[in-house]
Structure formats: C-alpha cells, structure tokens
Image 1 (cartoon, one colour):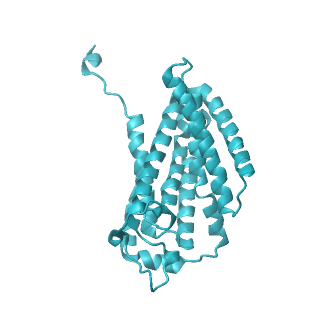
Image 2: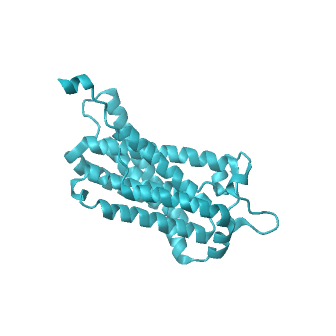
Image 3: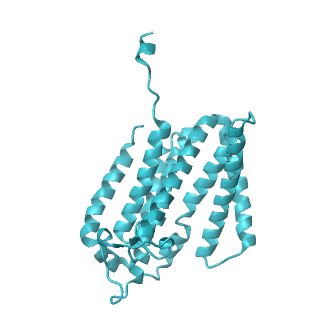
Length: 282
C-alpha cells in the first residue's frame, strides 16, 4: 500500500517534535499549563468520541457486509457486529456524559440506541455500493483499535510517569519518559500519562481517510478528509498540553502508536496479492 504524501509529512513532523520534547518536555508544559481553560476542557470532552463513533460505524459495517449464507462465520459476524456496535455506542454516551459531570443510564441508553440506528442505516446504504470495501475498512479499523488499546494500556500499566497537573514540586519530581520507573499497576491509565491513551485513540480519526474506499461521493474529497483529521489531532494535542494531562512526549508516542497500528493493518488488509509469473506469461 502506498502511503500518501501528507501522511509521510505527518510522520516526519512527529519524529522532529520528539527530538524537541527530548530537551523541552517539562518547559513546554510549564509554559502552556492552564487548568481552567474552558475551550480546552470542552475539546477534552469530545476528544475520544470520534474514535468510538468510528468503531461503532465499523462494527455496524461488519454486521451489514456479512454474507447471507447463514454459515457459522456469517452468524458470528452478525453477532459480533451487533454487539460491538452496541458497546461502542454505549461508550460514546458514557464518556460524553461522564466528562460533562453527568451520569444517567437512561440518557446513555438513549444515545446508544441513536448511534446504533444511525450506524446501521448508514452502513446499510453504503453496503449496497461496495460491501467488500466496507468490510475490509471495518476490519482494519477494529483491528487497529484493539492493538492501540492493548499497547497503551500495557504502557501506562508499567511506565510510572506522573502527569504535569499532579506535580507539586516536593513529593513528585518530573522525569523524562525514558527515565521513568517501572511499576506495574493494572489501573495505571487512571493516574499516569505515558503513553497518552487519549492521543493514541485520537489518532483513529485518521481512519476517516478510508471513507473514499467504500463511499463513492467522497472520492474527490480526500484532501478535505485529511485536513479534518489532522486538525482534530492538533486541537486535542494542544488541549492535552494546556490542561496538563500529558507531556509533549506522551502525546507524540501515543500518536505514533496509533499511526503505526493503523499503518500495520493497512498493509495487511490492502496488500496486493502476488501474481504468479507463469500466469502472466500465459
């Protein structure tokens, strides 16, 4: 699979910023920190929603693009797609209301049902155009999400790095991520910052660039989709820095995990089959 030029530039920028974070990680957070920023707090509320919405969409895509032969594989796809769409819809409602300081199981279930119905209807409409392309993109999206979540949860469980907002200058002392101690804590993602789970999941918005693969009307809008995804990543990254949830290095490593996971499964699902030379001669 050929990587588009803007993605190559994106990777180069990430690597360059990693070099900057090596020298100025703490100074950048100290300069930008503003825990009371209403704009950044608003962005943080929605930060992970695009990833969960995309996963709900791709789960519905698995459901609607399955074969109708009533085989065991088809029935498993139907059950898995149905369940995952409901789960990701529930996560959207829960994360959104939780960040707003609200909790209502009735509202969460209402959001869940609304997302489920919308994803089902949209993927059903798209499926009539190119079911195979939709299924391939859906498998790529769900696979990369699972890998991103696995790597980041393992990382935060072992890397004992305290977020900037929890430093008090006496008990806790800033340490570069590569010097952070290793201390296993299963729920480390609740109070550790490396790598940034939020940014790793935010990288999933890059998957909207797969839309032209199965939706014909978007095939002339690839640049617009790229601008939307990159802009959202930039906004979330800046908000995480300002709120003190993550250092620059946390953000960059999280993004790299997300991007490389997507790239890995893109290569797997979009690789071209080898053509037998004897067949070409014939």
